[in-house]
Length: 200
Image 1 (tube, rainbow, N blue to C red):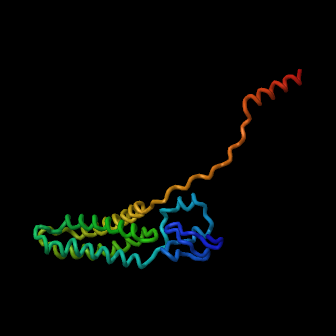
Image 2: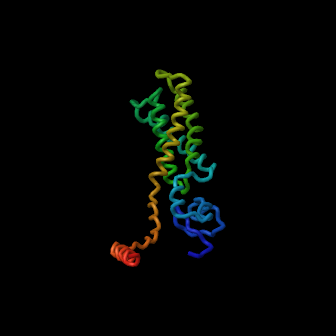
């Protein structure tokens, strides 16, 4: 690899040293451009990249599709399945955790904030829909607001778990320090005996 190029710590592709992002996977290269050591790069492997609006829209769309399948389409296919009230909120919370984990597992960078933001917006629309279809198990407005907050929190946790599952970087081995030479006990004993002989 040429001296004016740096290697991406995500995909391993070579990039010009002046590049801010990898031309192959889009990961940030500013940390590598600042000539961090392997230990420092490994320690920062779970730190988020810059906030990207496109992953907010991707997350928002994915959450809406999952909600549409789980709480709108599936009840039309399975008559016994009825996501009203509290069960519907629990289903949304679980879906948000899985969706955020999937997004951060598949995305080239480390997106911790984008899935929760997209999940928050999608959860509002989903809870409004759940409230509109509830005819038997009608919950209070506070319960749906709590459901939005819980879904957002689970999206944040899912994003972190997705990044943990994707991180397969091995911890770099510490650099071997040259051991200090030790004088043998025999040499020390001989030196001590010589000193005593001279003093006498």
